[in-house]
Length: 415
Image 1 (tube, rainbow, N blue to C red):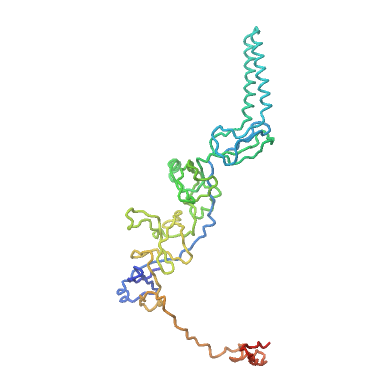
Image 2 (image 1 turned 180 degrees about the vertical axis):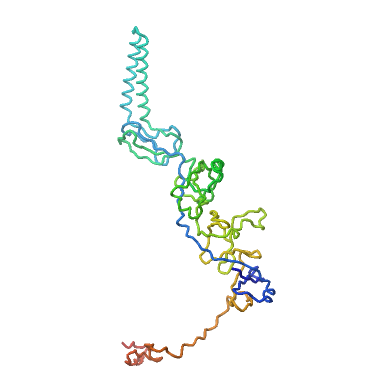
């Protein structure tokens, strides 16, 4: 809708705009210097439906399991401790393994001694190799009784205690490499097919952390997974990406929840692309964060927004700190400055601008409204004349006598 505005100077407010509902006369419009402004009501969407959790997790995370049946002898680390690659985490009882190793070593010595008196060197050599293999196998059983960290990381859990019997394959501890974290996040679908996907691998994107943006490197791009399917209501050009975050200083913890630029965190609105402002001529550096202008309580407000995606020709979906009563300024013939007062005229047919600023000290006049002098037929008020309380049945009620005053001036309540 086209509305006319009157621009005037005010001491406390640089520019005051007055919107009128009707068209003023040509003479008054020319005197006021009217310009056209178009606004529409914002239809807001609750963002809670699209709050899909994105969680940082360790890039490498493994469970250290028992390689053979045995009793836990010692646990040399604790939850939360940092471990080096190859560092001992726990040890199983090695008595049986050492006994087998001793037997295998003794058997090897015996065969080597017998081989010196054998007349068939090839047979003796084969026996020696078999005995050596048994020694190696026994040594491997001894080594497997010591559970070590496969890489440098942090112990996230310890699931056993000394004296506990573990079966082969039963987990004893969990270790994660927290120097690099990763997350599965929605991302704008690349264009150009396989070539477009390949071009995006290795590029940097942004995640939203508690303390600000987080740089993340795109490792792989996948089709949109089920947990992000509700986002198709916003825009359909989405994919998923595994991204990695460098965490050498340990500032981020596994399990930290982060946000995505594709997920709305405030009310969502579908607006015309023309209403989106991405450049500010007052900014010498050029591009600034996208904003839209709205009318809120008769004032122009610049609202920073985040563009979620295109929703068709000439339309985009944005999220920002909108309120239900906001009206979007779609078009203005002159630039509007944030803080500009926009007051609607009290008369829509007079065609006269009321250019007075609001007076907070002004008092209103009493409304002179007379009650109707006649009663519609068939309706009788159940109350008598003023000063009485006559029921509708015609019964009367005796008026109570005033209470007698006591010497101290207090009255008695006539029960």
